[in-house]
Image 1 (tube, rainbow, N blue to C red):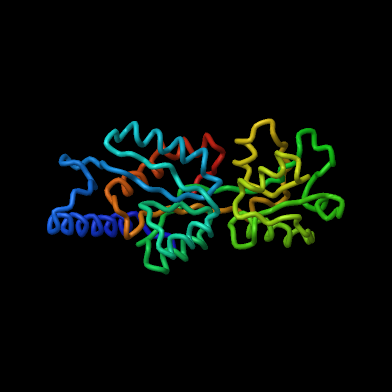
Image 2: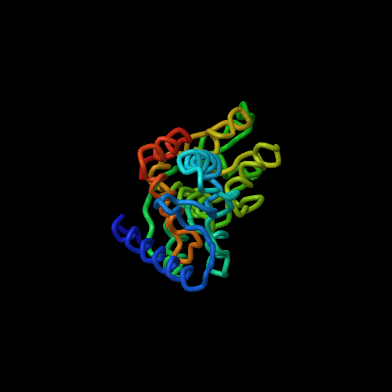
Length: 263
């Protein structure tokens, strides 16, 4: 599913050329790049909820390097939600998923020519500060007195959580199943839940609001994050430049700072 850089660049270049021909024939004024070849215009990004902090920073640095590009407020949600929106007709220039399965749905629908892995992530348990319930791992979640929340099964964080629970032989009936990891973490932070299965990057970003409990064997269910320029991108030039920036040394440094692993 993950294609090589050359394939992605060739596909994006073809889309850009087609867009320029169309603009020239119709007299349109959409900006997809400056006259000197620099990217310009507006850039629309769909990204997994767990990427919110990192992608906000990446967008800010990208705009600083490309002052003619305006990155619109990024649409963050569960990867399955975003993939469904794209398949049903929503438009964006770049899609970043928290797993390969939902990216595959988009590429299979002909909406992306390929994708590249740019980060990895693993899961931890988020519990209240001080860990009042003495939760020390997945087996503790089998306690019926605990209120446990997790992502829905179709969302990457939900699929990974269930894989870890199955591997540990632990059965849990969640009090709620959320559509993104941000909602799971919010319930633990507010005290509505005693524990939630989330990514370690989300717990790191939450600071003192929650406490982390390691999950034994978490590395066996590592999430691989792919991103791609979309084939119907309104601004393929800026989209390609953003993807290249995320994959660059500077972009990877930002992701490391937010706790993501290398692809």
